[in-house]
Length: 266
Image (cartoon, rainbow, N blue to C red; front, top):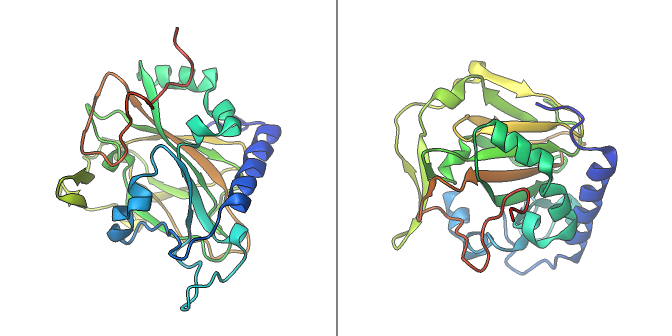
C-alpha cells in the first residue's frame, strides 16, 4: 500500500468526472446490472462489448420488483467501465502517470499494457458483495502477469466494504478462468484448491489517496456495503506486453485500439 499516492485534487477531479458521466447516462428499459454472483450477467452483450467503451452498470439491488430505481441514479450505479483510461480525458491524465510506469518496472513488468479501468462506487446500503476471486481469472496471460492498481477515492474500512486479502495468497494457483469463445462465455474451474477460510482474510483499511497494488493471483474480496457511507475507488488492470495474452479472455483489443502503457514510448 502507498498512502497519499493521489493528491486530494486528483481524487476530487476523478470523483467529479465520474458524477458527470453518471448524470449523462440514460437509464435503459433493460438496465445493465453488474454482478459477481450471477455468471449470466457477464454473458450479457452490454458487458462483453464494453472493453473499448465507457459504460455504466447498476448495483444488483438498485431496482425494486417493478423495475424502478429504489434511489436516485447517482446512488444506484455500481461502476463505470472499462476504457475510461483511454477514452476520457480526465481519467486518461490520471492513468498515464510515469510513477505508475516506475511501479510496473519495479514489479518486473517490462512492457506494461493497461487493458481495463473501472470506477467503483460501492454505494451506501446496496453496495454489492464481490466474492473471493483472483484477477488473473479475467486477464489470463502466460506467464501470469496481470497486476491491479486500486486507488482509494474515499476511506475504505470494514463498515463500508473494504478489500480483504489472503496474505501470501499470490503463491497459490489460479483457481478459475473466465473464458469467451465460440461456445459462449463461462467460468471454468481449473484448480480444486478451495478459497481461503474467513479466518485467513485480512482487511485493507485505507484512507482516500492510498494506492493498493494487487498481484493477479492474490485472492481477495469485498463484503456488501450496508453502511450509509459510499466507498469510491478507481482501478487499473495491466499485463506485460511480452506475455501471451489469451485469445479467450473476455476483453480483447484491436490494432485500431491497442492496449497502451502508462507512458508513451517513442
